[in-house]
Length: 250
Image (spheres, rainbow, N blue to C red):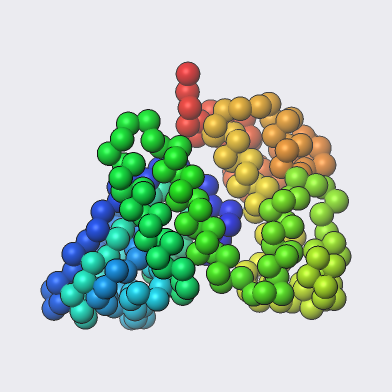
């Protein structure tokens, strides 16, 4: 699951779920993605025979469009944020350890308060992106931390390479590529391309800038190269994507 490249399109609601011990529940084709935290209590999710435990030490991502069941092992309170994003974030329940639970709970409370205020969408999204960044950052190996930060600060550079990233981490290029691929499940090159495509989707959806300028901002060597890769990855041209997914339409 790639939290670093996610493009959130909407946060549908934020509420604290009271879970009473012993009451089973079956979810059929969940309507949105969910981020669940735990104030107290314990829940065990079961999907395709695999169990995933939710308690105070983890954040749980719930998959959109998927079915699962849960056991309420201990009575407690579970803050839940339902949201939508571009593409597929995950298709199974995903559990991520969190050492900074109090910070995440504070952010959740801010989102919940703002959800009752008109014209607060941008602030809510900003807070939520911060939560996703903290959750993701905590799972990155120390040896990759500098390189990942460098990627996000320099993804718009067409010269970005494995050798540059390995030097940021003070490790060999071979070891960097192996460690990065083992952690993220994809090569550094594909990770960077995914980030560039995700950023391009965001800019196209927001409707700001020409296709040429977006191509340059996202690190593609030319507009032709950008359009060719975008269509190969997304099935449509950047202009068609903008027309179909534009968020702000004046």
